[in-house]
Image (tube, rainbow, N blue to C red; front, side, top):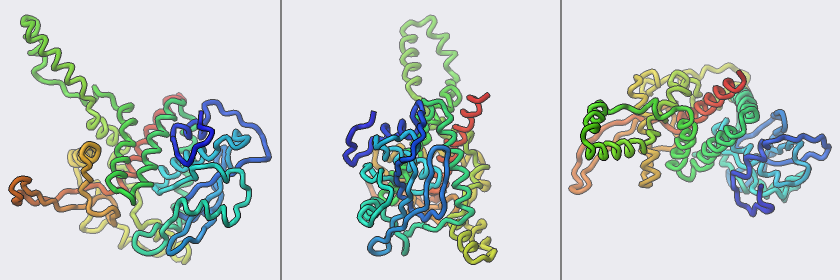
Length: 398
């Protein structure tokens, strides 16, 4: 049950049942409510789904190089009146951000939900909630090519259909993971380490469901010998029992995380990740009506590392390191070793690490590491979760 007054705060648990009620009671009504999404790009066409539609964006110019892109959403028929209907668009924003890999927001209150026409004051009230830098260093890529939009539409359609078809408990778990990816994209410019942490965390609940502990657990080669000794030495049996209990507490989540990625988004699928400049080049080609050859930029460069350049052991170590970096951020506040939040490389960055002795401050060693940048980790989080949900959906329907 959602709070009567949300008070400009979000409790995402309230949004999940309003996006997909456990029991959907659709009623035909002519007075549909309108909610709003706040995008970081211009949407020029209607996106129609089973229960709702997203309409083209209204661009609002803000001071400096900032604008806002407001997309009206025709809400589902099960909203007969206000009912905190804005909670639906908050959940929808999470799903859209998850699929597009972009920051998407929705208003934290529903004061404008029943407005059919927005005047300048209403537009301004919405616009200030998600200002987008449109020019200069760090500007958002605000124009989508038809090629990019087509991919987004197809995957968004499938993801929403999956979420409505899954058993409700799995739907709830999926939405919680999707929300973590959403928060990663919203916080990337505020704190890169936090956003990287959230992408890893988004996969963890799915990994622990999909990969059982026994799959990755390794048996101590001396355990059989110790069991035999324990049969004739009661005092040793107590120690062995304590050892087994302690070992059992380790859920081996890091190993299960690696196995989850290798199974549900293996390196062979990483090639589906677009080059960082793919959309902008496609857009330029479309508006100029010339089939320009951008391969000199988008193809692999001599200095780049691609997944096929690494063997399975190296890939597994990279993934394990990502999980460990997440843990160090959680427990020590240590940021990942990336030097830049944005990368022109498609997959990996190389960073030089200089180690000094903490006590003497003397130089210990200098070495180079290979790091997955933000975009492939975002892609892996999205596709591993979607592929897992696809599998569960198939099992359910057989």
